[in-house]
Length: 342
Length: 200
Image (cartoon, rainbow over the protein chains, first blue to last red):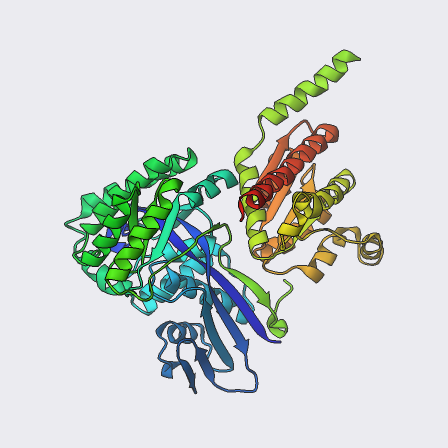
């Protein structure tokens, strides 16, 4: 067995999204608060000493004589950058489809970089894996994205992540006991709208608006501390109110963050008792999150489901969520001939 | 006699009032994450600390779940190191006392694991050797130490559970270590009981 299995969790971000874009945090520190959840991306790396090719298995299956011929942009860029040119097969598996706004593409990148380093006999820590994934996506593949998701997936748990102008990133855990964690889970509803979208188109417009929206983004970064305080005091209603304010601000950042369909979903939840909520990810589709009194949850479920039915969203569904503490980990490393005992 | 007892308990009270709560919280998160990824927890120490490690493993693997053993299909996998007495003497006699923890740990350790190292001085060379092995593999380390905050284990650990006391007062430090480690057991017992009570 020469196989390496890496698992990376997806994440829910609460407030501060958008302040992790370089055009903002190079002028003023960016800050987000997020948590990882029990939905995962798995990367499996198979060393193939008898096959002098590279293969990538995802929604497509590719085999090439050299990584430069691969279509999968991240696998291609990572292999070229690390100088891995043959004898490898990389597969990816996931609990949920891509582009749901739960950060899955960056979770994939963190798992990929952690796994490829292990393939080369190197152990990298949480900070190094997050940096490697951010560099892969932002510098090598030139995605117009921020770097909150790479850090969220790599470290795991509830964290405040701060992006400094000098490119350094600080990750500070929010130390919640099980009662507060389960309490928040109990007040939370998460729906996949059935609409998938790539973050890049929305973030491109959002980036061009950073000058205009600079003060709004500064307020969003500042609100992270208040969110953390309310989280520690289990003020779920207050947290809901903050999500609502954050969502209104986020909608103002780019014309396509929301659309009439997303607005209908959101209004259905709010009209039936939710304290607040937001669309997860860059916007335009993906998942809608609500914080609500537990006794209102069924009513909100029904209302949101009616919207999905009216709009014929076949893939709409509720996603039950549990928070997890684990980050991106090598679950299994059977690549013994290249495994160092240190 | 009563005065002697009161003097000791006053010191114990002071230590308990100043428990490093943030570091203990980090340690609980490390254990939670190891559980979620099906990792193992290796626990070790010398002398009294080995006795604490053995006691903790017994409570943690079984007592945490025993109100609802049938409801929790995934359990903790805590292992005292070395897991047999024969290994202690084999490593000590054949290789050196420095290797009694690092030697066996090297055989087992996987990236998904975590370790708890217990040393009142925080400077026992065999404990530090095993901690350095874990650190080199980026396996999270919970360090349970005492006496001087500058001790090696406290410097190296990811969760720094340190009990201040005058050097040599093992009685106080080991007693407080026992309380902290038992609290960690109770935390998970309460957590898993809560989950069992609220699951359909």
